[in-house]
Length: 497
Ligand code: NDP
Image (cartoon, rainbow, N blue to C red; front, side, top):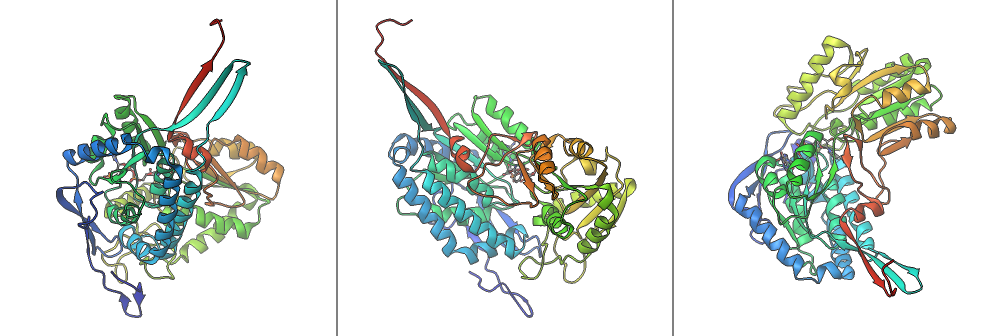
């Protein structure tokens, strides 16, 4: 295991991980391994064995049997102990996990540490709720009582993307386990190592029953599809692209399996002329350039009110050109590598298309030569003057590309904000709280931030309007998603009517 991230002369050595380790029998994978490589250097980070269709069937069969045995699903205190223990173990292993996350995903080490810490915090939140999955009782008439129970779904498949692989895993897995389900995790093919390492810490908890947790590895089209299509799975919690979510929903519909979908976004970030401009500028950079723009809630469409437009764009372009892009392991860098050469190519294609339609005021080029050799680096880009129908304005790029549009009043800002198929998040910058309230209410989005951006709380629900998803995660609704509701009626009335 490597310690210390960079030295004066460069990175410390890394020992390639071979996963799953012998003791990690919760990973059901018997096929040849895939290679997980560092997006900043191309270095081999880990080899991870892939699952066959038979492995998926075994995982489902074992999960069903473990869940049917009882115990776990009726013992909230046991589930709380497991989740609290896991949260503490995540914290104790923070530096190793953060380094692995940066090496496998490309994000900055600062962000990787936040991801581990946030995952531990969210696990703790659901550890608390594991003992509070309450139903309710009602006296409906003198001789009629009803009890409404929340019961676990059964076997839940958790399918995750690569951009925040731990946060987005925990956000589904922790409430699903807390509610008393058995879970089978399928991580993105680009981030299997961080997932297996973290899950190993959960599986190792003393009170964790065998087979309540398992993991399968491999491509979405084969391993993911086998899981979604399995009759032994009761629910699929999917986080990923909108089109993949639609495919997953269609496949799940064959067996009428429940889905919770957290999908793509193209979120507006609205700056009014009366905003605190320093705060709005910093917030705008955070909104779009976190994780190199590879974040579902990225504020990728900046809308600026006329009176502030030119000054804001000038300052934003200057700030963007000065952002430090490079190896995520170097503490001073603000943007790391994008996750893969394929993702880099997609981003550069969008930039090329944007140059034909609008004005590129910062970045947009691949970064090559020393110190970028072997990595997938893109200089963060800002576009103005794009036509409203531009693909850059309508489609999720999932990269460090910001488009800017101008508006003249509140109604135009709202119309522009709601003009895409997505509805995941939005930001509003103004000192007029009446306006903030009116605009926030009018925007079709699951989360609206006022004078801030990208602040998430375990207690507060997130999710998508329109094509950004179905269902809610985090908060109390987040645990209810993973339950069935049962009504038990005690009716002592002499007649039915
Ligand atoms: P994808 O939709 O490509 O993949 C997500 C997961 O689904 C991966 O594990 C993938 O496996 C798997 N998968 C792919 N096809 C299938 C299938 N047919 N059946 C079952 N599983 C399948 O998304 P990305 O990994 O590229 O992640 C980026 C996307 O995720 C963006 O659109 C982003 O907006 C969205 N996202 C949404 C969030 C939200 O909260 N709303 C949060 C974070 C990201 P494999 O890796 O092998 O292809």
